[in-house]
Length: 496
Image 1 (cartoon, one colour):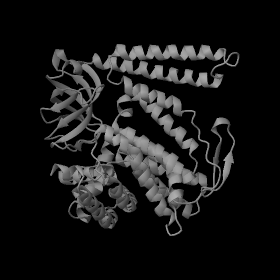
Image 2: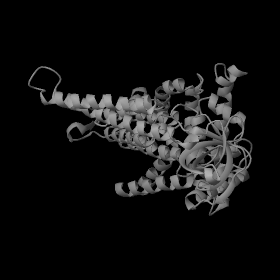
Image 3: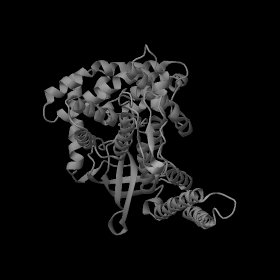
Image 4: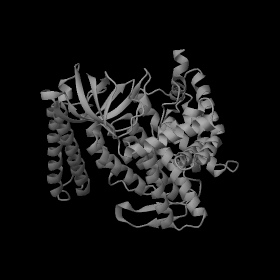
């Protein structure tokens, strides 16, 4: 679940730039004019997201009906605007905004209708409840599940065998046990599977592996390199650390939860710290933020810092692996960093809206998933409210960076709490204090751990030293999660 962290506590300098409706004014020390934010993409993006959320799971005909109604609304608003100003009623700009909102909503509903139709006609849908053979490509790293085994994202290319074989290009989730751990993205496999009901409406069927995979093609560099980095970090972590910390470091840095015990994973979920055990926007924020601070410290100019930050972000994605969750974290984390570093909230908000618009059109299931919604909600809240809240709680006895950390934790927690409740994800009443207690050491683990992961393939002893330096911070995070999960009101305590 993605959240971003503070980029620093420096004060903004008063400045203004003219640009029509995108004009921005940023005050100094909270005493200047409030920012006028660029909201031109927010309404269309909200329309696309809402329509996508409503039409996911609908039959193709129903989604198409929504598209037709919204198209009619767009046409009516456009025609109405032609007479605006001549007779009493809404003004022309408002009607054009309504027309655009209805038009993009109609496109979103039409796209969803097409996807629903294609999914309904897919051979795997007809095979739900049956066994079949598949040819597939692993598209991401496996993740452990509560019931044991792993969840492997794959793209099914062929279903059936012999004369009954049919092409079936579809991304699905495969639940498996023996033999499926550690497969690098890009590995081609053959297996016998049972086709299961979709995990939620609008999603493709899931699969359960009935046999170990038969590897028919090895992963390319894009998959084998991140896999080798993961394996090396596991070795380095085992050399440098002890106890639960051995598995926690790869989890925090690369999202590799395979070495974390089920009890510890449950502690982090119950304490509201599960987002730390997965790659999130905070990872990219801390890594890129460190690069920006170092570049500024050695006197590199603004353009050079931007280039260095871009290279660091690309390297981070290459090391962790270009999975959808990683790309989502990179996008939202970079936006949050830009907002908090530059103290300019208009453009980052528009960029966030553009990302949501693009994802909702290209991948509706991801756009309406809890992880993406949490990332977007937290990032938007930080863009809009982190700076004002930090200024409001700052006191003479409180350092600016402490105020920033508190503001980020409070804003992100309050903003994402409704999503957590609505989605049924576990988060007890101690989640906010647990996140505040964990916040100071998260950047240490992220930055040093990422450096250790990057250094491991070329200098293992150096990576061991960096990993060992994370030991106190990892112990603290594990302790905070364990204590918070054991307090009254936490989900784990209630189950005990």
